[in-house]
Length: 379
Image (cartoon, rainbow, N blue to C red; front, side):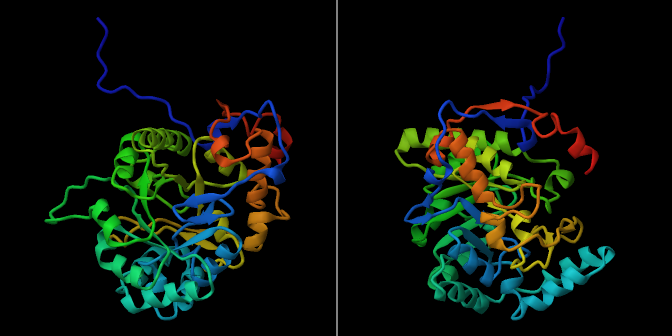
């Protein structure tokens, strides 16, 4: 008699597990359209800089917008806790490894100054840049009206895991359908990794969904909590939810794969798996204009018992423009990300990102090691 199984496990795939199959027809990369649309806003590149203090400040948000992308300002980070956040950023960069966790817990224990929220948003808007801001669900009802009054363009509700149905002691928790009616700007919500959670979020009327739990270079969610799904599988499952929601509603809600990117090929694989855009942290934190000064750290809450996540030293590899558009001065694929995306679309014969969703993919765990003996030997 066969022993019954309590649970059935399915295999899931990350960026290193898969490869994109070239198309039967190819097109010139410069003839591809890689626009990303979120309601009335259109970005000329499908790249969003993450809402992390080592990545996005006012100046970085302005520059990212000028280059065609989008950078998200964290309304619960150092930029809204300190009048002079540069001083705190310098302290974080200079702190010894043994002191970094208590330092991060200390600096993030300072209260958010609501007047700074309006100041930071207005500084971005004054330049003519698109202003996107991010808050955690717990502070959304308090901070959303402030962001709306300051004329932010895109509002993101973001946490490690976000669901449409949440049980808490609060009499009335955050209800996305009500939030949608209270502020007029597009609302992106995340993060999630499953078909069902993504579909339920879309049914609340939101404008976009962030996909990914724990893949970021500075995130320890998977180690500390043991939760998450590798990004290719998570993206494919959420893309399936997007297609189902479009069938039932007629409305297309884009998904944004968030985290885990190390090189241009990862961006291309995310798009082939169904993403409409990507959100990137560590690669962009290596830009000379990034506020982290060559360092990167997680943005989890300053829990007194759980660690915040490591501070990692990335160094500075080049300018933001170089990281996005080249010319590449490194060989690891972390520069000229947009060139990689356009080239992959051209090789697959996909004139747009939505057509790139139809590219064939294969399970290929040896895609980065096959025939690379000399490269691996000299790493």
